[in-house]
Image (cartoon, rainbow, N blue to C red; front, side, top):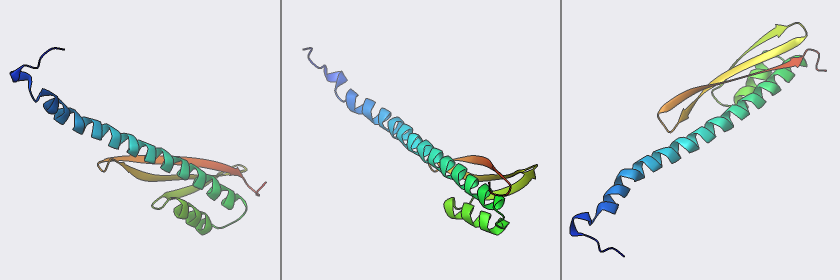
Length: 114
């Protein structure tokens, strides 16, 4: 074992003090990204539900309520293309308290509820 020189004392503490904020930032961003991915999945599921509601003849209000109940703060728009009724939704997700990312989802259902 090599003896510790007097001028190297405390170097591990200094290195830890420099590395710890970077590790905390990576963990914070990773957790935020997982939250954004979960929000994306919830938004996709809610748009599918809204498209099915519209295809069964429910009103735009019912579809919008179902979407906003599942993903608060989300906005939606719907369109018809042939026999398909499509719903697009979007919302914003904040990662780590300072990075804001837009999340979008869309889904279509066959008109008539079939």
